[in-house]
Each structure stands twice: as C-alpha cells, then as structure tokens.
Amino acid sequence: MTRVHDMGGRFGDGPVDPSPEPVFKEDWHARALAVTLAAGALGQWNLDTSRHARERLSPKDYARFSYYEKWISALADLLEENGVVTRDELMAGQGAGPSPLSGRKLRADAVAGALARGGPADRPVDSAPKFAPGDVVRTRRPARNAFVAGGHTRLPSYAAGAVGRILHHHGAHVLPDANAHGRGESPEHLYTVVFDAAELWGAPERAGDEVTCDLWQSYLEPA
Amino acid sequence: MPHDHHDHDHAHAVLPPDPALRVKAIETILTQKGLIDPAALDEIIDTYENRIGPKNGALVVARAWTDPAFRAALLEDATAVVAELGFYGRQGEHIVAVENTPEQHNMVVCTLCSCYPWPLLGIPPGWYKSDAYRARAVREPRKVLAEFGVTLPGDTRVRVWDSTAELRYLVIPMRPEGTDGLNEDDLIPWVTRDSMIGTGLPGRPE
Image (cartoon, rainbow over all chains, first blue to last red; front, side, top):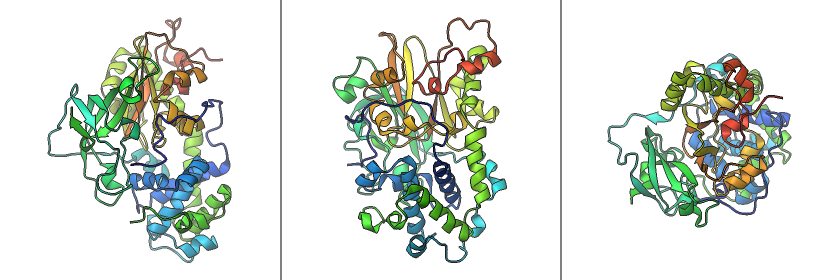
C-alpha cells in the first residue's frame, strides 16, 4: 500500500481556507523553495526521487510539518543520501571544505535559462500504445510500486481497482515508479483516465460528476 | 536503498527544529561547499515573486475568449501555444487547457503533492497545497467550491482533474456575460487566479 501523502478522498480535514496571501508567506518559505531548486540543479537526483523523499518522511513528520518544512527536511535527507553533504556537516551547520560538485553550481545568470528550459517528461518509444481514447480500463489494485515495496507510484489509492475510460493518450512519459528508484526512466504510454464519481466513492456528491487521473500503461488493464 | 529508516536515522532530524533555522543551516552548508550561489537564490525568488504569476494565465484566457483561432489551437496543443507567448518552463512542460461550458465545470487538484502550472499561474497558493483541498477536492468538489463562494447550476457536471503525472492543467473559464464589447486587454483583469484552477469564476475587477 502507499503512504500518508496519498490523501485523495480522505475524511476529516475540515474546510479549505481560500483567504488571499502573499506568494511567500514567510521569508524562509521563499528560501526553502530556492535552495531546493538550486540543489536540484546539481543533478544528483531527479524530480521523482525528490517527490519520493517528501513522501517517505515518517507519517508523523509528514502530518506535522508545514509544506516547506517537508521540502527542506526531504532536501536534507537527499543531500546526505547522495553524498553531497555529510551527517557531520549537518550536525555542525557548517560545510567542511569545497565540494567536487561545485562546478555544477547554478549561477545567478543561469537561473532564468534553467527555469525556462524546464524538464520535459515525454520520451520517444517504439511500442504502440495499448489503449485508445474510449477504451474501458481497470487500474491496478492495490496502488503500489511494482518494483520496490513502499516505493513511489502515482496511482492514487482512491482510484485503485477502479474502472474508467481512456480520455486522452499523451505519448510516452518517464515512469516515476522506476525513475524515483534509480531504475532508469523506463518510459511508458501515459493516458488521462476519467472515472465516474460513483465508481470511486460509492455515493457521489452528484450523479454524473467525474474525476480524472493521468496514469501510465502498466497501471492499467483492459476491463 | 534508503526507504524506511526510523525517525532518528533521518538526516533532517539533526538540523535545528525551527524551520527558518533549518533552511538557513542548509543554505549555509551548501554555500560554504560552493554548491549554491546566494545570488541565484535571490534570482529564483524574484522570478516567482514578481515575474511569473497568474497574469500569464490571464493573458492566455483573455486571448482564448477573444480569438477563436487561438482558442482552437490552445485546446488542441496548449503547450505549443503558450510556449509561443514565452510561458514554457519548469512545471509547465506539458500543458493541457480544459474549457468550462454550461455542461461541464473543470477543477484542478494534485492529491499526491502540489503539481501546478508554474509558468502560467506561478507558485500555488497555500490552500492548493493544503491537506483539506488535496483530500476533499476529488470526493466533494461542490462542498469545496461552496467554501470559495461558488455554486454551480445543478445540471452542470463537475470534472476534477487530479494532476498525477507531468501534465499541468489550465482551466479556461466561461467568459462572463455582459463583456461583449471588451477587448483582450480589458478582459485580462476579469480573469482571477482561482478561475483558472476552477475554484472561482471570473468577475468584474474591483
């Protein structure tokens, strides 16, 4: 099964507070975002590894940390696991000498280009897509990473084992389940699948409402 | 593989508990190691605080309202169309535009994290990243919409788009009534951020 971040459909969270607020509510929020992006630019991990690092914070930490606390805590874990900083450096709060990776440092004049370039996730593949728009499919159940126990996956639990219809095919994209775990990009065909709300929730808020998920081919079987 | 360490094994646990100090410690260490340039951090922050935000998306929507060929191209291949306007980049590599109609209202969420079309809307607001929105938007979108002051006609279907891959969704709201005489520039301020997420409707600027 998956983890605490997989909260779609959960009961008990109370109202959403849509009050306006600045882009960064606190200075350290801005700093946390910027440090995370700049550290990512060192190229020692990918977006999927980074998402998984936040997801595998302990459930207790995930629940009590604010949004950017999750980011910086996961960043500290990634920095150490990838040998970019040591435990001693983290404990001391001081860097012990220059890093061999310092040539990869994101310079201020390279920021605009790096942000504008982004990191597209589509990849060419030779195989034909297994499904076409209109096809009826059933998702994997339970939602899980098929390679690594407790590993990263992008099939939400609420949509596991559900029957839906292919709405769009998007070509092939990097498979997060593999890419988050050093297993290569393993691109697979990606589809938008639409589910009837009654299929997901039993008693929907209103008959005929729908939810879509973007799902990789290996998450799906014909139904 | 480092998957299931206990709490006390985590690197982050040795950092100061105060999050502002925690981020400062990481910034200091990485700067001392020659791995980050504080000026680059300032540049990243300035980009998302002042340059990239919902005004980009509002331009796209206002143009879709006034230029039928643009609208058609946007619905066909939004990534290419917004890239021509300079709105390509991080967290916006694969854009899909979804249009509201009297039959269907679209609303966007990321239940698993906080995926959001940065080049068009900037950094997501706090509520978009909140547990309450992530948990509830898929199961009870109408109750969530009511908390935003939005009530839909009973015969309008809600379709909630859960951003589970690298596709990023932009909602094209319906053009408000009574705006027939307005051009693109006039219409831009009518397009609110929330109307492009699907939790709001466009409205007369204050």
